[in-house]
Length: 219
Ligand SMILES: C[S@@+](CC[C@H](N)C(=O)[O-])C[C@H]1O[C@@H](n2cnc3c(N)ncnc32)[C@H](O)[C@@H]1O
Image: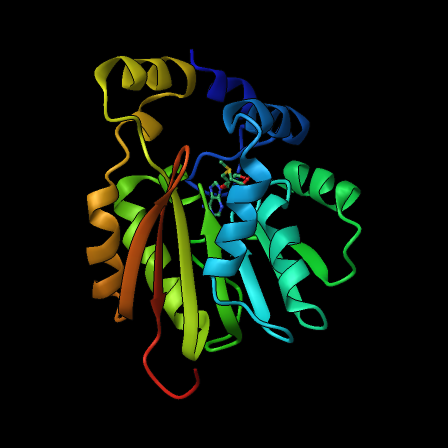
């Protein structure tokens, strides 16, 4: 049993995705796992999302809201909607969020309740590998649907260590989804959904990001 299993204990999560239910435990894990670089990495992700003052942003699989709050700092008078299937993890997100422009709602990536073209930016971090592989493309198509033309997508995903020992450790600690994360499928999936201006890069220690734009009017 990996450490991940200690964080997921909802028998009826309302999704085939793997939910996080122990938010406080997840945040402790995050601090240790990122070795002091979590804040820097997530601030950079918020920048890379292209979110600007006044934007409406959706953070899917927001967990305890770590990215949500960093996006909130960027959009000022705009708003950031955090979404997660786990009501328990959202309780913690609400409890530790002081930013008045963040809201948190229960929902799932594969079937977003939001209207078409209702966001300027859609972001998610460390969420897609929580979905079964055959559900990920559907989630990316939903991101496309709720973005306005010209809107921006940011995906942050776990980048497994290249060496065998590191990868075995990750698998033992967190399970196979992170250790075998198929990052090479991200950009094709984003392109298949219809996005353009796709670019990607790495943030140390653990993140591969992909950014893209929905064609149409706007930026
Ligand atoms: C590793 S956490 C990432 C949390 C946060 N984005 C961060 O970077 O700290 C993955 C999150 O995805 C959520 N999740 C699981 N299944 C999901 C689904 N079907 N739709 C949206 N989120 C889901 C989990 O509940 C969990 O909070």
